[in-house]
Image (cartoon, rainbow, N blue to C red; front, side, top):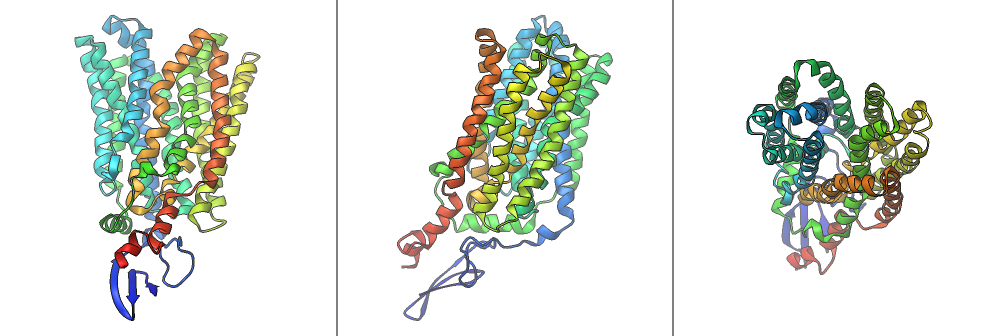
Length: 469
């Protein structure tokens, strides 16, 4: 007969202790009976400092995403300095950055940053800030498009911070608060672009090179704030180390849910790069002025930030209904379903109503901004999908899958514009969101890797059964 304790598993065979195995404190095995997936509280979950951690993650992400706007504003002047057509430079820079977004999640393969979060953030910031300084310095001298592509690719690698902060904040916030803990950080994807638009626009009279240097300085300040105040949750780090020591987990790629969850985020990622990269071009196509276009993008960015917070609060509210991993994941997926629905409606509004009037254009952009309810809920889910030992590897794995569209999306959209026109761009966006609704339903029913591991370890003939036998 087996007895369970809160610090380990003791097997008694014929009245004698056979083996004791240490188990992590997140409570896979309750002390006596109960739910095998019970979730245990950590001391950091009640610490007021957890809100400082959420704030500094939001700050560094906001300053980081200013680089997107800086490139867009500087592209014409940079192209002139390099003696190449602006369209060539813009296409090369955007495509290289997008490929970097995809490759970034390979850097955390195998969970190498699970207990080295700050090292990962430092690496990501180096990938971002060093090119921000080198671009205005080297481009006029070398006029090398290849060097531009390499530097913009490096800047795209900074997106790995999303997975890193998802892991770091999981140690500070209980599952029912992880959505709001990530909202400011992920809302910064659009907020950083909006703030960057204001900053770079006001500084444009100083020349594109100075704009780059100043924004690089702002990024350094954001990084300094993070490294001054960021702390790892001690209990969470200890759990990860202990779990890895006693881990017999399979590769995260062997779980169907890894692939399903990766696909869940694809409609949101496709929408973000379509709106962020192509909505200004569409506005000019409709005949709107640069000031009007800038206002639309600013309102879209601000609305996206607010929606990220509201979506996170809704996901957290639904998550509190049942303290189980399955409910936490499904609560997040229900919010993502609402976000996908808004994308379908918003994409068709942009296509058919935005040409009617500027007011409709603004309303359409606001509706599409509701897609930002997805990121905080999506990135709150890995800690309930995967066991502690594979949590980091799982987060980076779903990031690789979901960001695969970043590598092909801009090129695909450009081809669509040239072949079938703007209708193709927004219909693809709507269709992907509709497919996302179906994928969400599948994800709500698929077995979670953490459930699979728990069942496997309690099987009489499973890995743990064999070890105890």
